Length: 163
Image 1 (cartoon, one colour):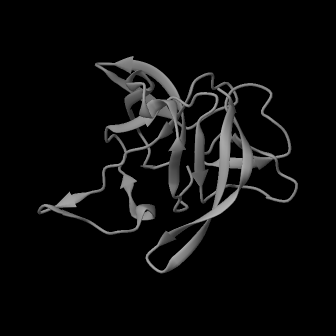
Image 2: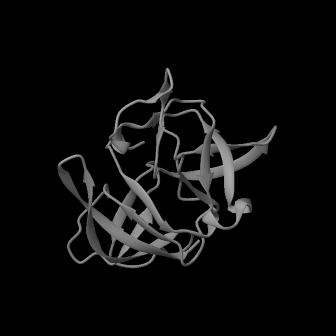
């Protein structure tokens, strides 16, 4: 599992308009927004989420807009600090072709990359020079920036081209 502090931004996703694409899950590992997970069986209304493997057929992307609230106040202003403990129920969505997202953490080498693909044994996307042969794949559409306080952080903009 990646421990890097990612900012995940769902620019335009089908799950915003189709509640059926938003699911509830739980993992035996710590999760962060934007983590790529393998979606397993549903038990008592909650899907089992695991780190993707080479055999993953159904992917999800963790996205809880909820920030921790203590005594009625949001804890922290940096979305990179939101961590969901192991075995905590989280929201995730099923990515659909055409979904537009932005991320700040990608594994691998950016040079010559055209796609972002899941990595077996990790929850972070990886730079790739081609679309994944099967399963989830995102095509890089450009870069931009997001501001957190006075810090400007580079984002990698991408669109889902395969589920």
